Length: 260
Image (tube, rainbow, N blue to C red):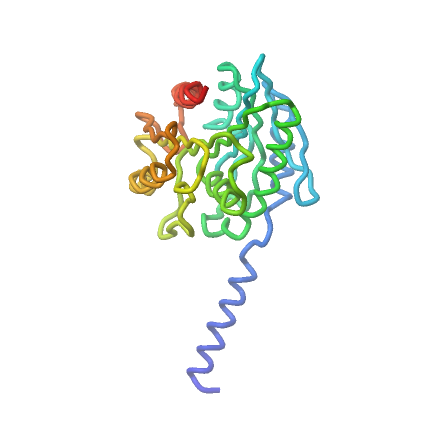
């Protein structure tokens, strides 16, 4: 075998091994472990089991008094529906403002997985989002707002690309456009053709890519043309809104109140 043929064979073998290493489905065993860890510790709200792709997955539903509005919450990469930063403050705090919440377990991979590792499994989120919307509609909520953080935004946008956004009434993206070093976004978000109002909220100390791409996201949101769409910055907040739960909830609730 010539040197060039040997090199070619070596490269092909490496590519084959790499392709095999790419996850083709979420880490369902890890999702089960996460559920076991958090279900018994839930104080506010009730665990509910929904179904997608023939499997049950965890959601946490928290009722609010006298409201027809609900917020469907998608956590960031590798976390769970009662994650202490971002998710728990929102799913509990928004109830105090009159909005029921349903926080979903989204597809996860190993703890060290990066943005590009998640791209092949983003479509697993589609049926989960549909199941969450269906659950809230069955509960009698006439308005359903989809709220997603970080990688949850990538999952939500993947769903929106395949289905019109008519089944939701508004969208909130937190830390939109977060990826990893030398892993630029695979596709631009379809913000320019969304028909529902959009809130693009990020921290003043967010990831550089989130901040750098903010003007582009704003231009696309404005092209979408909804009068109630907004872009806003939460002063002092990092990507995970650490110790900023109350200001985060207040910013989201204030925008939701303006939709009435």
